[in-house]
Amino acid sequence: SQQGEEDPQALSIQEGENATMNCSYKTSINNLQWYRQNSGRGLVHLILIRSNEREKHSGRLRVTLDTSKKSSSLLITASRAADTASYFCATDASNRIKAAGNKLTFGGGTRVLVKP
Amino acid sequence: AAGVIQSPRHLIKEKRETATLKCYPIPRHDTVYWYQQGPGQDPQFLISFYEKMQSDKGSIPDRFSAQQFSDYHSELNMSSLELGDSALYFCASSRETGGSLAKNIQYFGAGTRLSVL
Image 1 (spheres, each protein chain N blue to C red):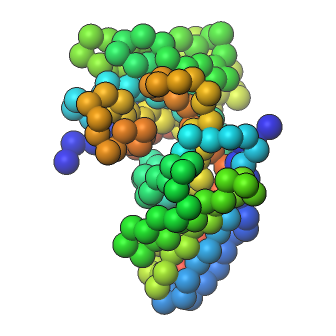
Image 2: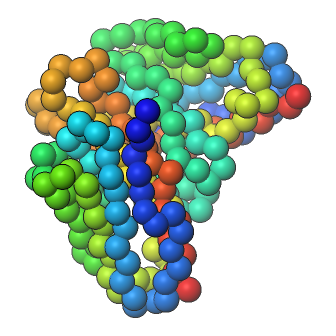
């Protein structure tokens, strides 16, 4: 079953508005990452938040993490047409201590359309 | 800055044929990951390698094999291809040693789009 699930599945907003999407997961995690994917192209890393962090900012991005609810949110402020993409959360839930090469488990993705 | 290089970008094969996908990680990255993304699906983890040894394994079919070479590049070999293998195959790399603040961040290539006819 999916480790992460995203909500909403699709979002349509006007340029300048904020976009918020949520991600839920099922097991304990080491970290949670957000990625952006333009249609049929590669995934671009946006931000990583560790399990002991609650909030993180990067430019117009704000990520929160609530480990008690096993959920995260990504907020994009002052959206631009270039933000149109699918956004995925991905969790590193490995229980392997000091291991490398831990897999990421991706959520369902939120398709964001920013209209000019 | 150098990114993850995947080749080929597109590949068309017939059923039961074989395919080899190549991945060149970012310089000084020691870990390589392979993911499969079907149409409209999430990326699914297949396998990863750290310092040329298999590190983690996901839902990789027995028909697929992979390895990481001494120069850290990786190849995904796929045999007896099936229609359901049609997908985008992503390689990602990360640097897991050296205490970098970027540790654990996986950087993805542009992907190889495999079509099995």
